[in-house]
Image 1 (cartoon, rainbow, N blue to C red):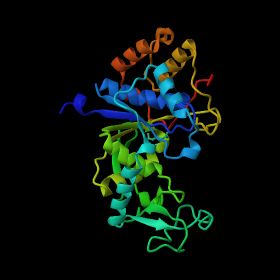
Image 2 (spheres, protein in one colour):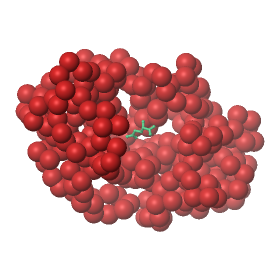
Image 3 (tube, protein in one colour):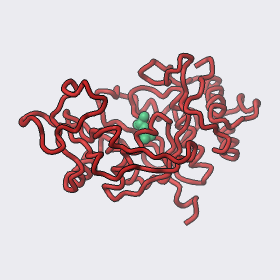
Image 4 (cartoon, rainbow, N blue to C red):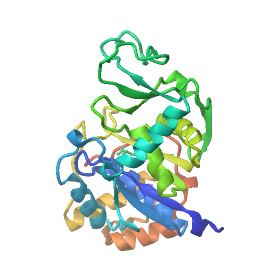
Length: 299
Ligand code: GLU
């Protein structure tokens, strides 16, 4: 099979608000990597946590992607429609002794840095709501992979603790949902922000436990503000530009943030033109593996 046939990438935003410059860099990196490989690029809306996802944020994100010329292939998938698949995966982990119900509250283990695993051999308090956790000590460990930018990684998920798979309020957790959906959509390449690099070991454990393939990973440097904070919806990063001018400039700056050294004239061009250039010149060898990248001053 050629790379063109098998490359499937995705951008998987949580619709907790509109996209900001940091999310544009992640979306653009994954888009360019897929398009340069002649592959397929998907968008998946990770709306498993409704209280965190204001109504309409999903369509705002899709309109923003279109404004920047980042058109996706196939139908958008919304995670809120995927409960049955997540439950099936959880049932499979339970059957293998790799997931357990936990009645502990955060307050009870506040003196520990990670959850100490008190419910591993039986729920500590009966008749209480339970979360489901992964037995990170029993699943495959350590997890190793070759990150396409950051090189060989080896991490033991047990040192990060037994991650929650399903919450006490019955909402699904990111780790389980992302693994099930990446496999369902036959994703070959995950390209996303560096902030998710240390989630990858749990995802590797889940992939192995569920008999799912492991994609290739490319984690991209994060955009940080002057005071070193990750640009995020929580710290009020402004939404992406809407004006024709603003879109052109932000797209150009996002290409610079990905170290693609676009020629200066490109800054005035429409997204289609900038993207055509960027696909033809996409090179991850140019990306420097800094964990963080300073934001252009105007964002
Ligand atoms: N939904 C996650 C986020 O918005 C990204 C998931 C991923 O790319 O694996 O941070």
